[in-house]
Image (cartoon, rainbow, N blue to C red; front, top):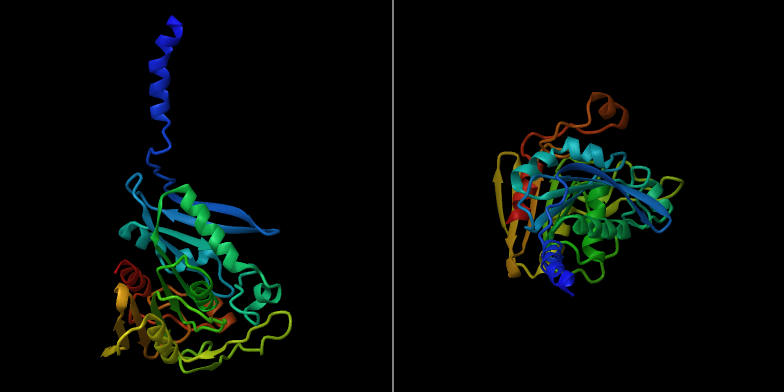
Length: 304
């Protein structure tokens, strides 16, 4: 009994030190991960800058375009630097064979095989949140092209995101009962892959064959109006500065629906380094516009 009495204070001290309420700090820097979703091993990269221990951080999901990868999106669009400066966690998932299942007819292998990319993103966000504290009210998604298409599907089929910011994309998925959320669209007015005015893009094959690509969605201005209606927004203000025309609506609940149209810009991420001359030539890619820095603009939108 005397020995137990002597040990009791030590046991209480150890219990206090191992309390589950102790703040987590999470890993810092870049890490690579694999998770099982259904029968598939899915991969993603996480960049976590130094953050205050135990303080829930915002999370930005960055979706690459067709033929891209998470690593390519991380490097090309400089999200690591933005995360370090802004104090948020950035995650870069990989599509199956470099494609995302944005709708039954698009795009590529992911659509052909009906890959559950929505389920993957949900599982990935949950796993990242278990590894370090993430603020569930500040989870955001952005992406380009095929990745932008998937952001709209995520907005329609999940309740994860407070805001999305598709770049060079439109909505081709069914969206019967969308919930209000903030939306920023960035789109080149000379984009012929996903045309600004809507309709078929130059890579459209009608959604047939082994690599289906059917992109026949609404014009970005009409889609912007759709999301203003979803959010119950008043009429927007329209301003033009240089190459940029901004359509901005401040909506109930502190939400914002915004469109930035970039004159003389094609299918690309404004302000990025671009894919390089060889890839641009082989894949017929447009050079990035330098009229704006899309990454900085998107983070400011999410932050607001």
